[in-house]
Length: 163
Image (tube, rainbow, N blue to C red; front, side):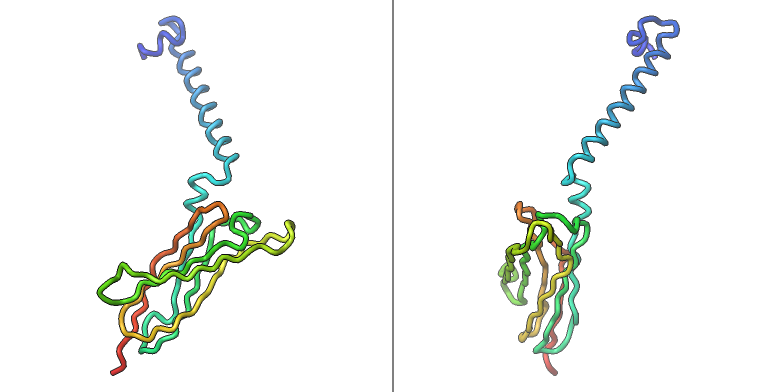
């Protein structure tokens, strides 16, 4: 309390004025922070809300195995110009002694429609034929026109050796 006495101007009744002033100041600062966040659509919270969930079907089977991957994008505005015809990169890590080697298949479509026809795709699919036994690791990356990337979870597909 003694630290706030100087704010109010006197030791008698000044402390309550100091507390009121401090409370109002804190309220104004918190409101200005909320307004600032609302003005920036690409805030950290919104970027955290963006995600890509990758699923595979089937998750295991005998070689040769055809696997269907489906990536579902959420948290992006359907009219977001940045993700209209987003770039997609499918990443596959093959089994073997060099797991650091990966295969990347990129798709970078162009917008060929009018400005008023924006629509963000939210589902992407790709199929792969897996001929060799082992565990394959998949991931997908969705890239916006500004270079921002949304990375999916990893999915493992096991190809079994024919008995």
